[in-house]
Image (cartoon, rainbow, N blue to C red; front, side):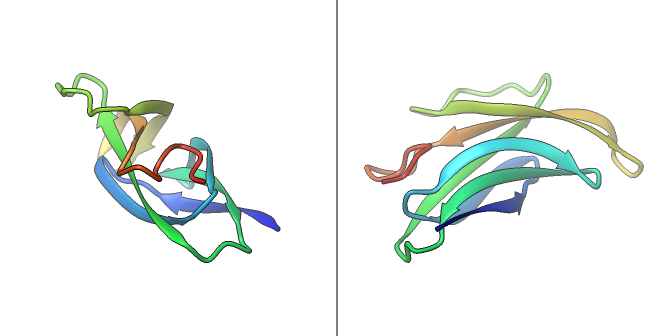
Length: 101
């Protein structure tokens, strides 16, 4: 069986352990917080490391090997002001891809 799970994101490096076979669906803003939506195979118990890197518009960077763009989130935060985050999936090893199998 599959379920859609939500993970909160922050600017910079975001490390997670996903169940093997999980698929990244999208990024969005919910309640003024950046989030990642993932389709998870709830029957799978094996975990795999996943890194999502969120960069702000205008932030200088060197792309990491194999990284893939997921999406953009427009934030309007009362404390931090308005800014835009761009999310990238960064492979963490042989098993880790956007779709882990």
